[in-house]
Each structure stands twice: as C-alpha cells, then as structure tokens.
Length: 52
Image (cartoon, rainbow, N blue to C red):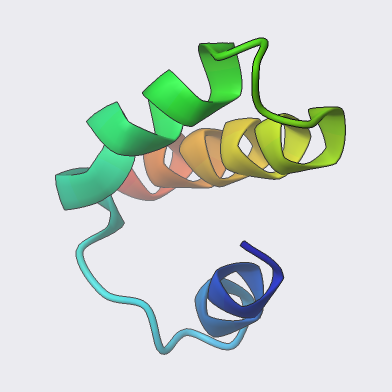
C-alpha cells in the first residue's frame, strides 16, 4: 500500500476511479490494519476530489 500511495502521490497511478470499490472495501474492512485502512480512505478522498 505504501508503494501504491507513492505512485499516486507522484502522479504515476492512473484511473484511480477504477479501483475505488477495492479501496472502499479495504478502508471498511476491520480485519485490515488501521494504517492501511486510513491510507485507502485517503486515496478514496483524492479520487473523489479528482472527479469533480
């Protein structure tokens, strides 16, 4: 997740909306460690901001 977040931050990850359902599932899954869920939620916020 850290590497993927770096790719997003540097603009190398494209079409983030395509994986937003997966990010949402990760963010909502309490079996996933907290920091990964928080990072997924932050990426979802970025997807939403980029969509507007």
